[in-house]
Amino acid sequence: MSATIGSAVSAAILAATNVTKIFRGGDGNEIRVLDGVDLTVARGEMVAIIGASGAGKSTLLHVLGALERPTAGDVRLAEVDITAMSDESLAALRNHSVGFVFQFHHLLKEFSAVENVMMPLRIAGIAPAAARRRAMELLNRVGLVPRAHHRPSEMSGGEQQRTAVARALAMQPPLLLADEPSGNLDHQNAESLHDLFAELAREMGLGLVVVTHNRSLASRAGRVLLLEDGRLRDNSGTEGSV
Image (cartoon, rainbow, N blue to C red):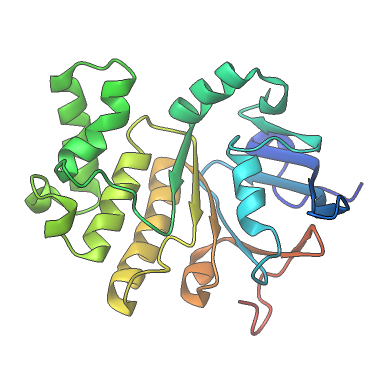
């Protein structure tokens, strides 16, 4: 097993060790998408993962966020081995400890921005008034208070994605995972979102892992890692890396 890519394990909010993910193809043969991935991410750190399309970047993100189980290896979040958890416990962990931002915002179209951000809080049983206060705090943090009562169809793409970021942070998760979060945005909105991610990791002490093909977003990260042949290697500072 190779040395873990990242900060000291004791300082890690996220630690993946020897993570392997194997799928079965239509012919029954094994497809080894991840092959002994090691990664640690510290609080307040932003890590970008790059690689060719089909390299397994989204699969890795899903394993790190407990959306999928690895075939082998383990993932620890705040020193808890999440791969040993039951399905029920994993679902609870995802709801409270991991925030997800995807290329598509997946906002509920019939609800306003503040109602969308409130949704995870209400599902968790938090009273409406407290959930609304928390949602407005987060919308203020992402610069969207003036749009709080607008529905997704009444917002720009950048505003929709910022709302999705606020929703991902509703439960104050220690880990935020983003999969091509600016892939559908124009340059100006993308740059604004990139700055926001870097600020959130630094100011909120999040562990932030972002999968991207965008050079500008990757440049905001403290480390850039290349996923190739199922393994991660440090790609920080490499020209033409994204």
